[in-house]
Each structure stands twice: as C-alpha cells, then as structure tokens.
Amino acid sequence: MSDEFLLVTENLSKRYGKNVLAVDNVNLHIKKGAIYGLIGRNGAGKTTIMKMISGMAIPTSGSYTYSGFNGTAEEALGRVGALIESPAIHPKMTAYDNLKIKCLAYGIGDKAYINEKLKLVGLENTGKKKAGKFSLGMKQRLGIAMALVGEPDFLLLDEPINGLDPQGIVELRELIARLNAEKGITILISSHILEELAKLATDYAIIDKGRIVEESTKEELKMKCRDKIVIKAADTSAIVPIIDSKGYTDYQVISNNTIYIFERLDEVAALNMEIAKAGILVDSINVESSDLEEYFLMVTGTAAGVQN
Image (cartoon, rainbow, N blue to C red; front, side, top):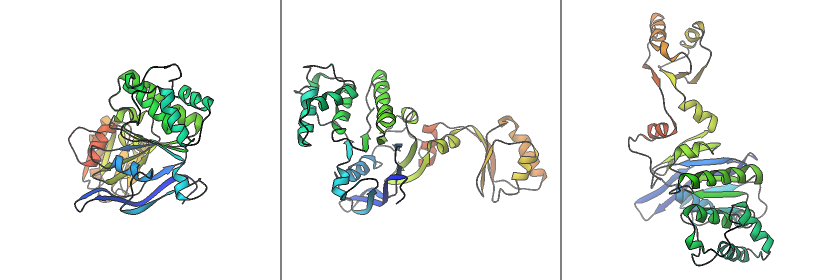
C-alpha cells in the first residue's frame, strides 16, 4: 500500500441474506489529506461502505487497509470518526453534556477539551439549550463534534448536508473545509447535493448498484465536465495531426478511441469536414456539455434525478 493513501479497499463486498448484494467488489483509494466525495443514489451502497470501513459492519468478503496508523486494525479504527445516518444525540441534554458522555467513553474528562470541540463547530454559546431544540444544522455540527472526540485522522460524513437550509449548508461546508485545511483531517463525505459536493471534494468515486463506476480527481472530473468537442473513432491517432494542423492546442487524447477538444466549439462542422477530406471515418463528432450531475447521470446510465 502506497504511503500516499490513507485508506485502500480491495474487492470490498457486503451481502445481506442470499439475494441482496449491497456492495460489490469495491476498490477505493483515498489519499491522505483528501476530501473524498462518494456520489450515489439511494441504495447505491454508500452508507454500507462507510459502516464497513468504520467497523460498524463486517464485510462479507474483501478487505480494507489503513496507512499511517500504529498498532492493530482495531486500534486503527480508533483513529476513525464517523457521523453515519443521524447523529446519536440525546435530545434532553445540552450540547456540552452530549459531548461529555462521548468524551468519558474515551477516558477524557477535561472540560477544556469539551469546550474546545464545541468552539470548533460553533456551538460554544448554546448554554443550557437542549439538543432537541437545535436546528438540523446545529445537530449535524454537534454530531461532527462528537465524531471528532479522540482526534481522528479520518472523518466519515454520511449525507451531512441533507435537509439543511441554505445557511446551514454554508456553515457546514465551511466547517468541513476548515477541519481538512487546519486540522489535516482526511474526510470521506457522501452527498446527493452534487453542486455542494463539487465545492468541497478533491477526489470522487461514483457508485451505482453497489459497484464503483469511476474514481476521479477533481481536476479529471472538471476536464470531463467542460464543454467540448468529442471525437470518437476506431483509431484517433491519425486525427491528431489534423487537429494540430488546424491550430488546436487545448485538446486531450482520452484513449485510442476518444479525443476531447476544449476550444473553438463552433467550428465542429468544419473540423469534421477536414477529417473526412483525409479519408478518416469517425464514429461520432459533436459538442457535449455537462455539469457534475449530468455527468453522474451519464455514467450511471440513468435519466432519473439524483437521490441520496
């Protein structure tokens, strides 16, 4: 396992009963210091993956390995903080008391430590207000504070912005970015609000029906989502000299069969004519435009809206 990665999963699978394969041979590669976005619809397997790598569920097959942690696998899991599904908050207790219970479970009785965590998530002034009276955004931030007890190196956040109002989304997004930048915490975050995820994530995995469809860096995904001329042919090697001769410079050969051109999109017809003059047959040449959500729908082969 490369020192570059904090977590690598190898053919990780989870089956419930005989007929439900929730996670199917998943291979994730999460770099140290990354904000890794896990994109998938309801039932795609996101939560199940998080439960397995946090020790909350046992894989049916496959494995996962953490790097940079000392000790046994059990001790390594002690370096993982998780907010999966809803926060485990006692509604009749204050934020301080909820956090105190979690700290005591870790053998931490320092009041200053509890107050530091509350300040970190912006809940230092909630006083005697009961957690049951908190807004959804405040509950999520308290859940994150509880997940941070023990100083984890890796934080798992399952749909943390789901249901939040715009202000709550901004506050949580800023908190997640700060935890990553200032505390150096590697974060795995799932979300169906892809526009918001795009503002945070450095790396992505798209999951559909329990399988990883694609892993990409932010830069790779941006490239795929730019407006572009897409040329597909049995062999594109003979097309490259034509593109060069016509003065195109902002293009990328994706594979032997696909070329992306990111400039002069209005000249697609003329370019097609030049390729045809050279006696080269193309399977298709057209302008494509997609944002993250459109790209997700394309690679998962669905026309339905994205759900959590």
